[in-house]
Length: 160
Image 1: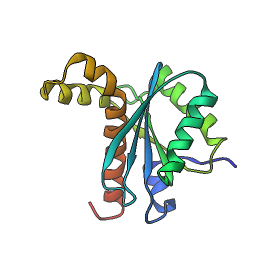
Image 2: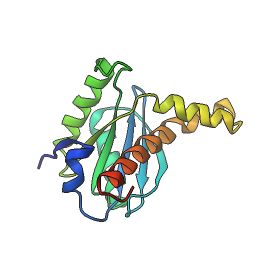
Image 3: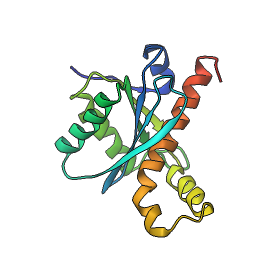
């Protein structure tokens, strides 16, 4: 049992016609989690996991995926603005490799440049308090990442 780690383009033909996806925004202290509907149209925030160790963190992610009938996992890949990959991207790739050993669900890497900044800007525009923003920013960023991947999958399928 080892999942494939793929780009959205490579994953598109391999995914079943229906079934939700789990989106992850991997931070150093937290993991934001989002999920999509079975038709993969809309991403919604689910929860923020306080990072402990890989094994319990992965178990929680996979439990959320099972509970939602997920057919894949979208992991944000923090690429630098110039397209290069730094230490955070390498950490995300390592997390993906380790997670792939525990599941058969394909893991789809998605360029997450500026996702947290975009979400933060939107929450400020909604006049959300700093404390509330801190509580939900990671799961909102996961939803932002997942929505980008969902939109791209729909475009690839010709339904965009």
